[in-house]
Image (cartoon, rainbow, N blue to C red):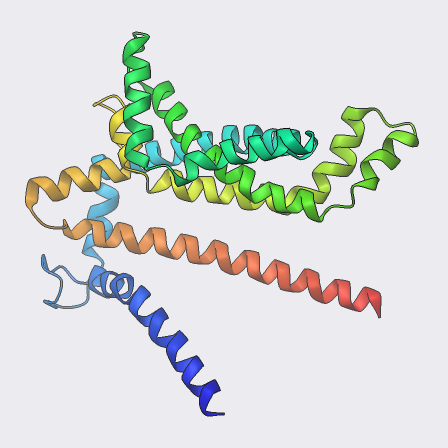
Length: 266
């Protein structure tokens, strides 16, 4: 009993430590005070100012466009790469698995500098394409890591069975393999979106200076003013609530699906 109480207390303490800064920003997003810790009354002014600020709106739109574009491209490439690795020979699979994990373990600054040198060497001007390539390079390995476990959990005989029943390899892939690994694909897509949204290093090295994202805007605004601009507290709250809402929806759907499956078994 004592161990159980201690374990729960420890978990809640860790959660409090992790989320205390975010909760602080959320609380002080509802006051006009320029400094966190000083409460000047409840107000939605920061939210009104946030949506009136063209720089923030532009950076938010650009960030979403980059994140979704990189997510789609990375999910396609990562899924195809994971399937290719899974059906390789054992020796080739070990080599490809090792190579696919290098970008994950490698320092992000190394990847950013390498991409910059590559683009400069070939005379490529920094634009949306170079930024997209940088985000795809960053996120593709994480899609592979998300899809690979689902491939290993899949019954290896169902693909062969589909071929024996007359399905073409393409038909068997889309009708049998893809539905089996769909949760891993979705997890990889959401992971790429998350990584792309908050990336700064690769974005700073591969973007055109006229193209602003949330990460570069926050860095620039903080560097100029020497402190976090008040409107960014409201922006942080909006992003947090959106992510929290998505997680709640996913968990509710997953829970309802499990309940339906249990009832079907009964």
